[in-house]
Image (tube, rainbow, N blue to C red; front, top):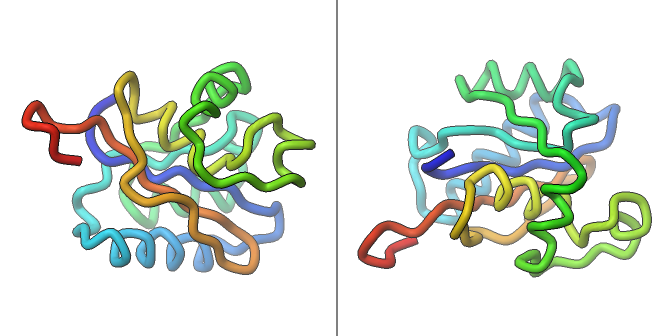
Length: 133
């Protein structure tokens, strides 16, 4: 996949509205337009959750579930470390690992994980040929 990917981690009870607001905040903090996003990614076991699917629909994005092996492979580039998530998921940040894995080989974080009360969001993409992120 190419383009800008929003990776999210979320608690089961988190509302779609909270997650959408967090993704929009991430874009704002990164100085990017909402139409720059090409996909919304999370851990594969959460990708079918109604709140995640509602967020993807609200943002008009393809929902992407990332398998544990792909999350683990991206963990070397994860800059945020949550002890709780590392213990339960084996990665420092689901949001960062999902964004990096979904963006594809060569992806870099555009915005490390930010958080709301029940969710996290990170942005990643493959740098352009001229090195721009």
